[in-house]
Image (tube, rainbow, N blue to C red; front, side, top):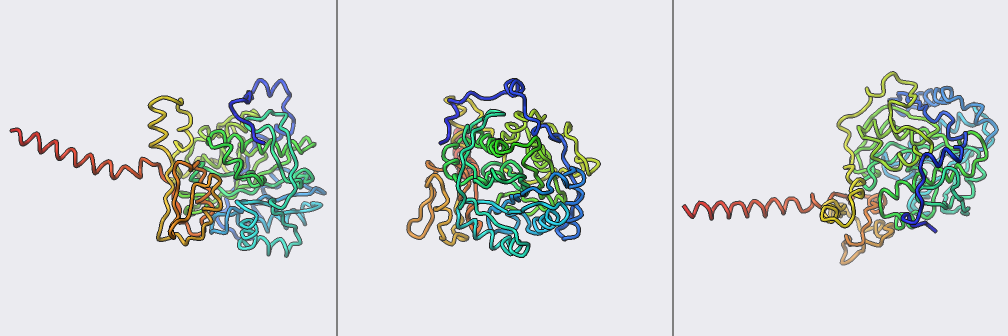
Amino acid sequence: MANVSSKIEKNNVPEIKEKHLPQKFNYMKNKVVVLPLDEYSPEKIQKTLRSIINMLGIKEYIANKSVLLKPNLLAPSKNAFTPPEIVLELIKLIKTDMLAKEVLVGDSTMTKKLTSITFKRSKFNDICEAEKVKTLNFFESERIKVNLNNPVYDVEEIIYLPREIKDIDIIINLPKLKTHNGYVYTGAIKNLFGLLGNKMNMHMTHKNKIEFQKMLADIFFAVEETNSSDFPKILTIMDAVIAMEGKGPRAGKPRKIGLMIAGFNPAAVDIVGYTLMNGNPTNLDAITSLAKRTELPVDINQLDIIGIDNINNFIIKDFKKPKISLLKKDRIREGTLISKLSEKLMKISIKINRKRCILCEECVRHCPAEALVKKNDRIFVDHDKCIECFCCGESCPNNAISAKFYIFRVLPLAILLFSIAAIIILWFITSLF
């Protein structure tokens, strides 16, 4: 059961130092490999992956180990999942060059059924079958209880993970660089959310977006609690060849960056990823929560970036991403007039595009707050129940759902009323003279 954050004694860096941060969190924590990759051709992918392996020195690290590949299989929509070409070439390298004992590919999305559909339509099933690699739908997994001890937790003292995670030696986290209409950004840390089978409960328990992000960081530490080695259990290789901007994580538009990003600390990888979007990583609590507990500076200039000469040359100044105030609005002191106005005007308003909606009711089934309902051949949103997680948009197969701040929904009407009032006042003033 989740913990109430207000009753939790928050961790701080001095506490972590007194408990002696385990060596596995210090292993290459500042090092991030960033390499150019301009297309998903097998030859170029394999060359880039080989370079990552060499630069991080992980060939012997993986030999005779069991390896789980954890892609992002959000939904069977173009650009919404980790490219199967990358996973295929990685499987080949791990099996033949790195001599791993066992390779598996696993994920969970919104539901057991949607996960199975995505495995099939994304061609992951075909790839794994051809390479004799087992696939795991984590909704089918038995769960084990993991207590967070060192470092201490931020939000969740207990995380329930698939039993397979305990038995796996190494997890290669394979996120895709994308925006997220509910949480601004999704990358290395957020991809670990796919290990949980109680996602709906987590969304409802952590409606506060800051709290939710810190919970994502807790998942990383829960995985490492199952690791008895002095080396990290998680290695991240992020696809930033074709990123997603705009209405991510499913309905956004592709934006070419042309890079692969890899490292052992997911926060370091996300610092690079979000910076490439021209974002400020200190604004994202998933990053700051994980970085603080691994004593990693949230500053791209203090990272040891290898592979390219200047990361600044790849930052996309006009990258279209959701407003950071989606998250920062929760920092305004509660109970004040400003907080009440902010809560109303900056509330996320979910809109259903009636022309695109095919009434499949996927959004209704996947809403953890039960805020959507079908009536009279239309989908309606109860905005009082909505917790702004955007699970509805993630599950919609026809991109019929969008999210905007409430202020932008009412702004045209407000401008119209203001204009009419101004005309009336001007008419009244001129009639006096």
